[in-house]
Length: 440
Image (cartoon, rainbow, N blue to C red; front, side, top):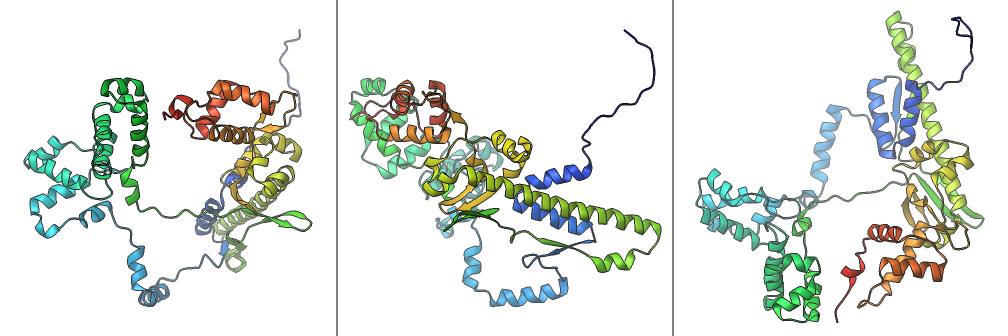
């Protein structure tokens, strides 16, 4: 073996992760909202990049201040009131007769309400609060009970057990069995050790089943109904329409800002000193790369959506139950791009279809082996079959995961493991057979 030192030339191919390439990759995975925020940020730092969009107007502080004054007067005052969300403290205190409360009571009530989380549970310590406010423990406890008497019923409870007890006493005041079960047998009841409870309380399993059905109607998170949630709106990136000649794909670019080159600014300063010239050259190159990256993003997204429509035609005509197996790797091979490119292209992207709006990621499902050895069943289809089997099962003798495995193999020709059934069942939010069992 020749181990002499020497110099030689060699040609190699190497991908350099330049700043421009990094930017192109980032833009591809941006959602419409993220892309809009990115362009607005770039417009602030790059004077050659202009945003031209009816939805994005330049701001003139003097003009806008006067305009806002007139708009505020013209706006319906009732709508302004309705638009203002009420805090948890305001919603609870509005139910009390504050005129009859002492200053100390109101102070304690406000302090206790500040220790109620978004689900409506009190997470403070009564003794600690009594010490901090220099207030008798009895008064603090009385104030907490006062909060627990407000709506929604169950607000201010210290745990789930107390929350359910408060609601039972309000909703089912005559149901002593329900109260006793929650008070004395809460853990075994939740674990469905009903035979043990039936033996201890000398009642039938049917009686416990009735209590369970009633408790299912209660709200374990009473504070959630007081949350001032704002509606979340999804803007689709593409629209799929059914035409006489088939399905067509139309990219929805109207919500994105239009960018243009500020030629006037460039002409005005391009002949200044060298430092300004270098600055403008950098910003010009940055603008050109952004334009190119946006165009690449649109082209890639169009190709990916078009291919999805081509492979999932049955889905758009018949619904989710007709979704066929398709992985990102398969789609990437057909489009002659990398799998990671497909993953970035479908991230946080939505498509509007004749049967609803769906995330692009939802069209990718794993394949399930059938008895015949043909991989033509998707995990979505298997989940749909599992749900139907459980919906139609005998509730007094629910199907176990192993029984579902056998039914799928014998009736549908689908080969899956018991562990896969358990995973799909959990994803569907369906409890195990022991927890689905009913006693009639």
